[in-house]
Figure (cartoon, rainbow, N blue to C red):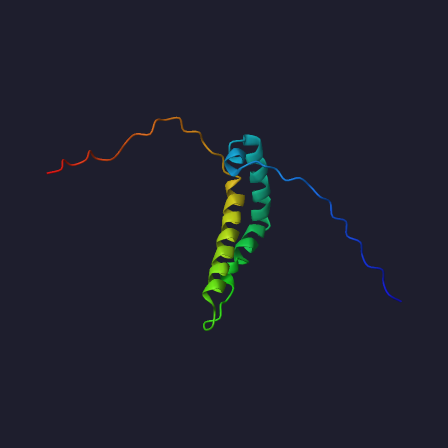
Length: 111
């Protein structure tokens, strides 16, 4: 007798449109992220994510095409960018209202 297939319900959800810099300017959201990151660090989950980076996959020494190499590099950079954003969500942005001061030297006269 065949077993009935398991039914998996997919619940659609809307995504937030908040940007990283907006998140980091909100003390409440930063506090939430810090709590999540603290739990991830405590359980070594963040370490596992870094270890599982696509950069750890071995490439064949011979016969790899440039397109395959470029695709792996793009995947790796996106993966690391995602992890960096995850950690950045727990770091508040300090608004610096100090004026930017020029530190370059005046141009030399043309002779």
